[in-house]
Image 1 (cartoon, rainbow, N blue to C red):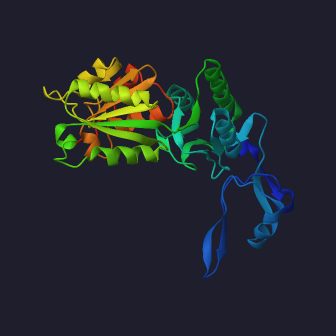
Image 2: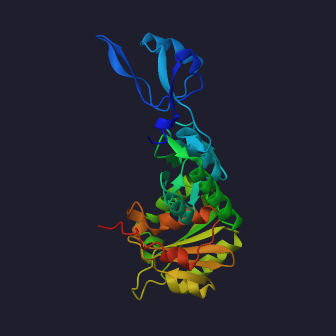
Image 3: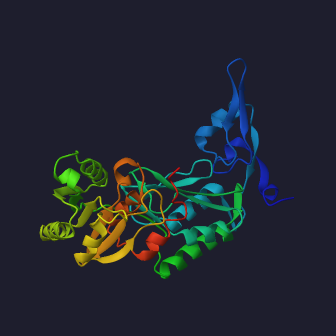
Length: 337
């Protein structure tokens, strides 16, 4: 006899209030309906009594929890509460699962090492979206559940212990970071645009991507492929007090592409020139003081998702990009056919 069977007993339906059904109960209405009336794991309420009697159930088997065991709904709720951080809401249990949802538009941060440690516990499930995903308010981020209907409480206690220990070490298990409204300066390089031979296509794309994250372009300037001119425009943008400078174009290794050298010449500390992501491998990220400066390759104009789309939300969420952030972009970063 397994632990579930040892908790079963037969009772009158009127005495079953608050108890748990160990299996589905089916309703048959000839010529109209045949299907599940109550699902396994349902907790009987007073309002259920007439329906149970209507299918001929004057006595039913119920499951009584023994000390040290939890119903799947309570287990899922406790795990969800253990991991939830800022700007999150919890759903009601449904079929043994609780969803953790975002309360805001922002950037989700998830501690993968913690998720892995939880999923190493037998019969426990912690399923998440990827960290650093941009989410809207109401989006589901995490689902918690256990595999059996009734689970050993010690397994849920272990999840709670791991969560507390990880927090004590300074880690955030799960949160959504709000986006700041950044004032952004855009410098578009290239003689063909500067002299009006072709229409600027970078500006509209960049403005749209920023608007989707709640930021705005406060000034856009045009410069020839000349290092001194680009440096001058970078300094002019900083004088305006912008929070982010985007320099578009001139990012290849061609001798007449001057943007990377100009960013260095302006005195910026370069985090990386190049990323291991395709498209977007020629992107540069640097800092002048606390102000990030990004050199954007041409793919940003026409590819829907590039390295710019990976890094921009993190900058808008107030994060400082470091070299390890760039290194990690290679795994799963091949979007180019």
